[in-house]
Length: 57
Image (cartoon, one colour):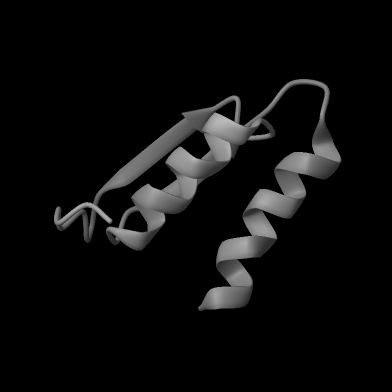
């Protein structure tokens, strides 16, 4: 895990329905950022990514 404090920061992750986008979104969230997800064409996968972090909180 990164040792960066992103509390109070916002991040937009494009391609959030894919494997790499999911890992990036999760890492940013773990560092404290508020993360917005963007996807094209794979809504279910993007929703799963969003729910992964919500469930952890």
